Image (cartoon, rainbow, N blue to C red):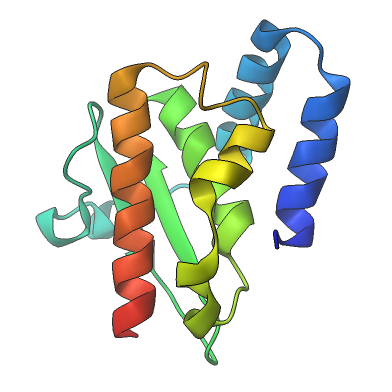
Length: 135
């Protein structure tokens, strides 16, 4: 089950008929995210397996998952914003039960991302699951 924030994104995507409009919306979601402080752009927080530079900083609080993230690519920054909407506020124990592939498929992202971008999203999801499982 997706979070209300993700459901809002899914509803917006339903109204956007054209993939270019959806692509622009993903970029806008990324632009709306607060930037990650430069001090957190370190190797330990970098996600390997992404074509662009990606950093995810977990900030779980009170048993719920949250994170900050950033990328040097605007579309990837938007994908981080979508993953943030999908996972932020979810109890740590439930993060692993979210089927990110299926949820992103609802947005039509699976068939519109390049193989490299899809691999990067998988790498980000795996990092999120690992952090939640260890937290």
